[in-house]
Length: 327
Image (cartoon, rainbow, N blue to C red; front, side):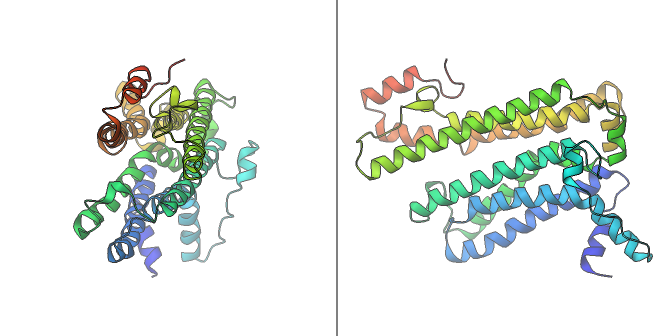
């Protein structure tokens, strides 16, 4: 019996959600552990964010295809014909194909976001000689550095929770849902598109500002134009908004009777609450991370130390909301 077959057998629980969640968690920590080894040896954080994006994409793909992988291994074990791989195009066209269109759409959304953010952050850190001030106090300590990679694995797992739950649902259950696109589908899609666009625009404006500063096209010390005149952290606002969209679209399915049945909940008010919590943990954790850990506090503290005594900085900070953009 192969190692992969053994892993699939050991993680084949009676509840489809656990059968998807456990291998996905294992993959997240495995990728981050492997990425940590050369990073610790070389004492570099150059590939930290990029490895996070790779973990997002890998875990999303695994959760989407894991039921088919299990079915193909099971068929091979008894000498039966292997089932065909699901068709993404058929799912998007509403013709089934082994996937529901929502599973494909959210998996694609996460993959697009992770690819864009990962390549952007890798390009940024490469232009800064491969260093990130967040790691100044930990890159020389192997235990702390390893902890940062495992923390990233936890971040990936919690943020992906609504997608993992949605992808774990058997395809047959989706046939019991209304065929028409629902309110949560539309609202979730709009929130993701709006948040993603906001984040991309903010990052591009910041990158353009940095490049212009390097070529001495301006002498500004901090960015106060574009979306950065509306919010002190517009990229973080976009981040929370897009994950809220993912949670909304997934939550619309998870709170249904079919969704609760698929993830093994008992139904009723408690089942609805549990399904909502499963979807909501994603934007909630992102918000906690950005507001209390590595996002806004680090950025605000850095800029306060550098420019806190300047009147123009004080004026910008006074008139610009920290998070929600002003109209």
